[in-house]
Length: 538
Image (cartoon, rainbow, N blue to C red; front, side, top):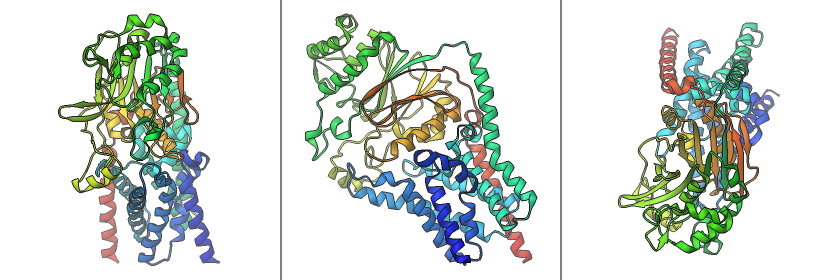
């Protein structure tokens, strides 16, 4: 009977932790944050050290096989993606097995040990950001982001602060399970478990009151979602028949945007690499492009055409920059679009800002994906070429603000890195902008998991966020991480909405995550020192 209870505790905890996040089952998030790990850790009591390590590796490996199951989609990546999937989940499982072995071998779960073990997990999640391009998916703190109140807790110490709190809460629950008659342990666990929600309720009430006093008008946003699969956007090997020619892609975009142009939006967004052939390749016949734009936007748009000189044209043909600048001139607004650009030093994945009567400004993507956007090792070149990937990108060097609206752009995967987005926040932007293409893993939970990270970045830094995706989640989010509007599903469409301009500095945007890292390291060292002292006395 005792073994049966151990199995049920372990399996139940695994299900709770696996699904307790926004992208899978947000209703389980609060329970997973408060009690997801503790029953599993309790079920290990009395087992040999090697058994604890092995079971914990398998348990957390299985958890991440569920949470990262979007990586099993082989539509565009082939069977090799399974190698990456199994390796990544195994590495994360190894981290958790190490933590659990430390928990089970601890002489006691006093305050210093609880803080040190929580800090150990934070340090292990933190180092994931810095290998190759980093892998920031699925920190355990995501379970606390499932409720709008507890989400506000990221404004203090960021997503790693949420992970620290989840591990600490579960360690206190484990201590309570081991001494179930201790009323003081019950109170300590209850206070810690409920504090993020109390804080969040007060935080929202305060900033809702402050936002009502904000005299700045809201932004009117127009964000375009192409709805195109990667094979429709690009000429992919073995799927050339699916490719939609760039002129037709522009036609589809103009058809969707045309009904909204009279609304005079403050900002127009196009997603990452929205059209093939990038920013400065002259491939469209000038008259054909002018007639296409005039047909959809009206003959008066002809007064808004830019000069047919670089980067817009070469006197014979025009680039994608030509209709983008036309839109900015015609609407009298800022247009931000994701477009590749090829220069003498190489290729860049960039965001361009077009404004009336000005030359475009540019931001270059700083986090590139291995094998897809850059090669970490030359020996991998043949693998990439087998998928039709021959050109690779150069890395951007700095955070930037674009245009008079002072938008802070990020491109796709960059949105998952708290320290990078905070660098943009320190430039004092009015809002964040993310341009993405999540279509490489169709029919998976990737867009939802990516979107959750966007909500967190907004709440971490107190800045509104607008996202424009090809087939992901195009949305507008306020500075507390609350969804104002979004395009449901992954079809073609336009998000046209207003978004509060209220913004504020948070503790996280002021101090970043390094104080938490230092705190975690300090208490890890103190707990290790205490454990050694206990062993000597023993």
